[in-house]
Structure formats: C-alpha cells, structure tokens
Amino acid sequence: MKLPYFKIKAAFEEAKDSFSYGSGTDKISSTAKLLGKAVANVGMLAVEIGSEAIKKLPEETGKKAQKLLNEHSESMTDEQKEKVQKAIEAGEEAKRKRIEKEQEDIERKRQEKENQG
Image 1: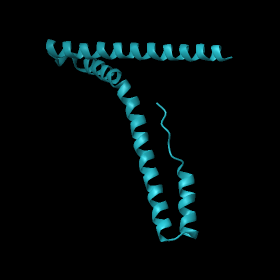
Image 2 (image 1 turned 90 degrees about the vertical axis):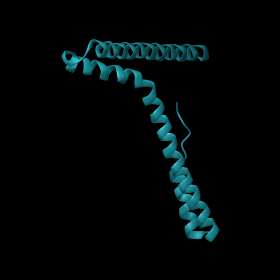
Image 3 (image 1 turned 45 degrees about the vertical axis):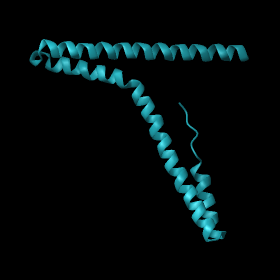
Image 4 (image 1 turned 90 degrees about the horizontal axis):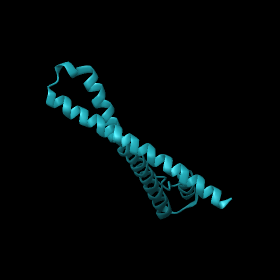
C-alpha cells in the first residue's frame, strides 16, 4: 500500500518564506502546517510499515516456532510440541498464500500491461 506523503521540503520553504516576509499569523499558520504535515507523514509511515509487518506476522511466528522446536524440543512436553507444530504449519500456509497472491498480482499486472500496449 503506497500512501500519499506530504512534501515536507515545500512546506518548509513555505514556513521559511512566512518567517521572512509574513505577519505573525502567517508565521503561526505555516509553522502549524509544517508540523501537521510532518506528524501526518510519520503516521502514514507507521501505517505503511505496520501493514507490511502484519502481513508477514504469521510467517515470522512460524519461523520462531521452528527455531524454538529445533533448540528445545527435548525439554518440551508433547502438548507444547503439538502447539509449536501447529504454529509452524500456520506460518508455512501463510507464506504459501502470500507467495501465491504475489504471483497472481504479478500476472495480473503483466496481463494489464499487455492489454494496454
């Protein structure tokens, strides 16, 4: 998901101009805009990074579960091993689905490009 970030350089230039040539209210207004755009960009970045991390969370959980099983299986009960194995399987299934979806998206984009040109 690509989000529409604000152009901070342009907002900074506006604030700089307001401080050089503007009135007191212009200075306050442009500073507030600059601050608001910066905060909004940070929020959008967090959403963008968060959505990617959330997509891969089941896979990462499966990897950690596999590592746990590899390193500590001798000290785990059968019930614990079963739970860990389920997490591993869920992670593998999530990875398979993600890859499948990515391949479908690539194919769809390729077909759209062929239909346009």
